[in-house]
Length: 310
Image 1: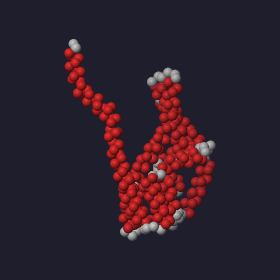
Image 2: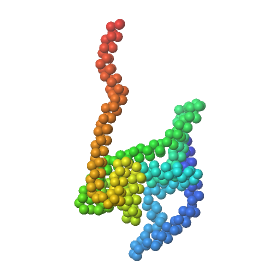
Image 3: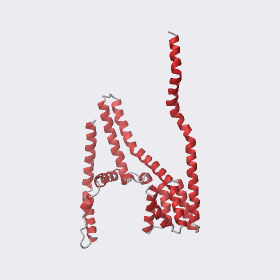
Image 4: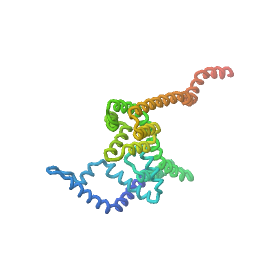
């Protein structure tokens, strides 16, 4: 198992060196250009750090691991269709792009996880002395499991992120409604939400504000936020805001109505979860509690019956 893991690590390091060798020239040229750009922003009496010092101040994962995954992914996805890359990137966006992963980096992560699973399965098979055909099935099972682990992790992160948005949406809408009714504009109310809360929804609102400051139309930024997160309640709220802007309807009334609707749906979800609880409790009751009760209640009777036959 140790030898198999060492082989997988050596293979990863070897491929990494090959990738760095292939991209060394372009990286050097880009480094020279960035050094020249940094020199243009130097201030009088102030020492500006060089590009190398700025890179060394980054964490090890940003300096080494992430670039390796991105370069490996670009090599592996050259023949992949654009629709597949876009689907992977959409899943990563829904998960909040953990670790700053790109579509290529995610594909490289899957391949490396599959290689590690094959090595681990082969090592375990040799450790417990399996014989063919089980000796060949163990690496295959390990490779399949390793390939599926990144996708399963991303799917769990997507569900968790959507739940966080749903949980934070009612409070954010209440603050938006109060701020707008107090006389603030919609952008200023969004800024209040980003200052008040530190969660996924506040980060999404902050991204919308940054896009607006950079010149993007507000309606386009809000519409893109709805498509980016794919949460039904959030998308309905954003579409209501967009329609109110297009039709000239007072935004305070729209916010108040949407806030009440979100609260109503939240109450309905809580009632639905409460009604599902008894059904979910049947499985542990039947599997764990009922057998124990049968043993406690019928055990003495069984003992007396067995004694009567002796």
